[in-house]
Image (tube, rainbow, N blue to C red; front, top):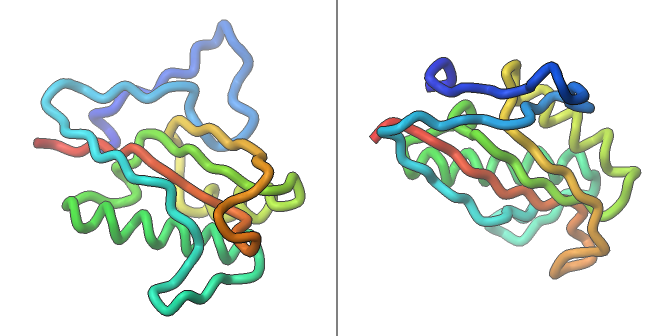
Length: 132
């Protein structure tokens, strides 16, 4: 599916700061799956301590949701990620960069004041596209 997508990074604007595309165009005849924000919590209520471990779990939860729809991480066209401190950026980006190769999805990363529980450091929501 990734080779059917068009990734746009026009040379007339600054290149992306990290591994992401400025835009991803989904061709006609594809369905979209919008995934709610995923927090790093296991079915037995465990929350990892580090931002990197939380990012791993968030993307693991996203992968499970996409699998239920017959898709995978490689079908993600947009990531919206939120962290509670600039100190969590390296941990988040290390996992994201390991999971996504070039051309990478479109992406936004924001620093927010917090989530539903203080222990959460990362939340990730995605949009994925796959053939109908």
